[in-house]
Length: 150
Image (cartoon, rainbow, N blue to C red):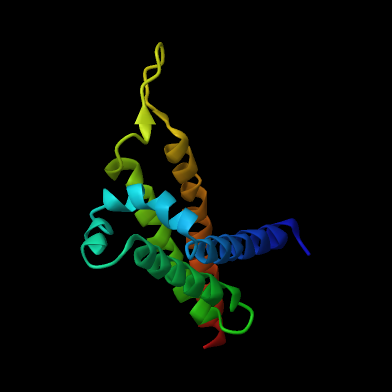
């Protein structure tokens, strides 16, 4: 297996594993409470709390992440489904990156440094830049494979 091909497998299945793991974790009270401050300030999610409980919102997001991760895993058999899952992952990570601008306190100013630095929550969110890239690569690769199949 070539280094490039191995890297592609790590990207795709690492992305799927993260989505499946974090999606399952969303069903816990600990995670529902942990993400609530991020979601409450989001224009995409904040309104959900008017109709659903903190746990129900987290469960909905978790279910979405589980479905998307599951679709990505289907790449060897159903590349078109994997491409759709990867497009869903792009939406997930673009949305979570929006928390960097919608959530108060994710950036801090440090003395003698001209740029803001991420807080603990901001640092956690920055990893999604790489996950967004992995999702975009996975979508493109899977779509190309689906097109080749006809």
